[in-house]
Image (cartoon, rainbow, N blue to C red; front, side, top):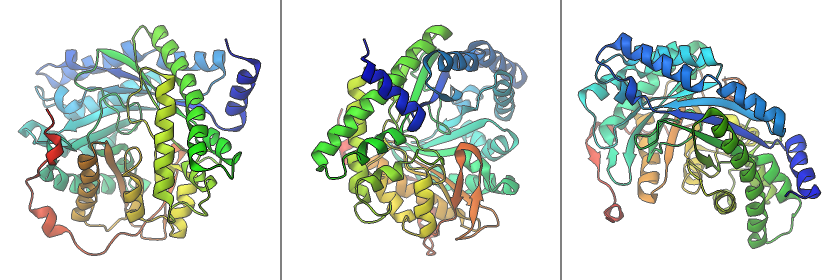
Length: 450
């Protein structure tokens, strides 16, 4: 039974501190949709998504009305299309069916235009990779991802090299929208199959036919808690953040469990990630600044982020026995008001972001770079981030946008939760000869633990 103080506290978190459930994501297996005919496969994909997820938006709205907790996004994640479309070779047709189904049921995004090529790629998977620019530029709600590395397999540098060109082409095809197709594409190391957040969500091979995963968020709640204790030593501050994360996670557990029950599917996981938005009072950067940094990106930022990420995980794990996904603190530049300001002022640089990704969730996320950035440079950035994930046994990723026609100092406009991003400077020196080597960077020694 909740006390009056706990009820009042939760109401205040929702009303004044931007507490919400960032997403409920229905994970769907499409293995039963596979045929050798592209038209038939696409039709089955559309029908299954509409049949299984048709009440997702309605359920989210009902839960918000009943519990008073905002559910910002309703999403679907499906089996990687590179697998589903292999027999029929109808990859692009499946993307069109996914987009049409997403619009029919009214969800925000649908993820899973994805491939898992961390150790190598089949001819069909290579064919799939080449369809990504067309698929993401010709659809509105479809998101994609490619896993090019893992701690067990190493880094597939052939795939890394290919992704640099794919990102450049995706940007070119949506140049009238600042390369927004790239904002729907993530390149992973150690991708997980139960991640509810876009653009990297997909239904993993080991997942059930249908499961409801939930992503909670509450940077504003954590920031408020931190600011109440301006002189607390770090050990006490960690405890404060843990207790706050516990409360946030309980809200997500409640909504996720109830949503799964009403949809008649299994409850999957709660992702503990602190996911910011461009809205004031909803920034991970501002949490770090509340700890005593004058601006995120300055010296001390990585240490502050490490404390935050660890405390959030510890508090959340105590609140739910079904923790999964990515779980930590996100640092997407364009989606965080504090990150945007720091990048615009030059305090937050690409090198500092890379260092920060060693201690938090995901990686170089929603980073805008000059439109004339060479493809090998983008590939080298991906390789660096994959190395961080591979060696540290963590999920890392790159969602980078070479904004056509723009350069350092300009601003890319993506709109909505994707926000705006100042175009950031990169090192001018070339990595082309490095990327040309191809092959595979072997997995680290400590990967051989079995």
